[in-house]
Amino acid sequence: MDEFALIRRYFSAIGSGDGVHLGVGDDAAVLEVPSGDLLVTATDTLVAGAHFPLDEPAAAVGYRAVAVNVSDFAAMATRPRWFTLALTLPNADSEWLQSFSAGLRDAALVNDITLVGGDTTRGPLTISLTVLGCAPTESIRRRDGAKAGDTLLVSGPLGDAAGGLRLLETGTVDTGAERHLVERFRRPPSRWRLAIRAAPQLHAAIDVSDGLLADLAHLATASGVAAEVDAGRLPCSDELLERFGEGDALRFALTGGDDYELLVAAPASAVAELETLGFIAIGRFALGEGVHVSGGPDLGLADSGYRHFRDAAS
Ligand code: ADP
Ligand code: MG
Image 1 (cartoon, rainbow, N blue to C red):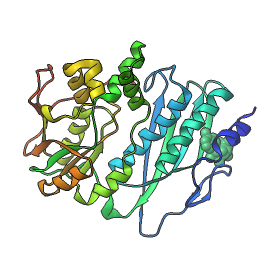
Image 2 (image 1 turned 30 degrees about the horizontal axis):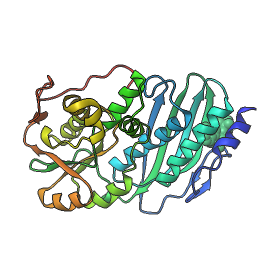
Image 3 (image 1 turned 180 degrees about the vertical axis):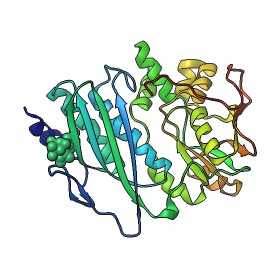
């Protein structure tokens, strides 16, 4: 099958087509931006072996590629509308493509976004998505708006995805708890609707992709404030605690990545309402700089100005 037939077969009809004047098939996509809105865009690339294990099922790779990209829109409190897919494949394996496009379609439906174009090339398996959306200026949330005195909240449990990835890397996924953790790695949550609902109450937002301490450091630095995490209030799932115990669960929650929950700063007056939406208060912002962790066992992490080092792959 040549490249064009392959594209038509697997990637021509994903999503509702809302706002699409021209999608997959022509030289470029043509999209309708509501007048007065700003155009918002974000790109993330997943390299096999670096961002997911080489032997991940294709459907999981497709789902996750969409979900991690859409997460950046949740972090902006913006509705994602369309995406393009730059796909680099070692070969045109139709079984793999069928399953990959099913995962992609699944995540596109969950997030209500449409595939409008892309590019297909040969090479080591790499998936790069660009997501597009629109929003009025005043509804967009950024990472640089946290103020001293704000409360720090998170939209769900932390550490599960890192636990799941550890299980995939060490090769045992048998119990219900283990399957739950792997699922949390493979199917990052969709938080953009929640973010839009919460936006009027938020001073700043970011998504947890690299780990709580790392992403919180980005938010605190951008905002010019210090952040303090109350380790005793970190939400860890029963499954994570059951499988890894308290110490490792806390370590994963603080430093593990891939959870794609929202991390937000809000004034104290908004906390009760955000809690009814499902957010959990885990700390506060103060004058100063750096990220500090109070409470919990000593995990040997620097307690201030925490810096997250990653290898060249991230
Ligand atoms: P061109 O040489 O004109 O760029 P392509 O073969 O790259 O032609 O693309 C043909 C059409 O298929 C375009 O509309 C492009 O957006 C779409 N397309 C190519 N690869 C993908 C892909 N992986 N996913 C979605 N659409 C794709
Ligand atoms: Mg092209």
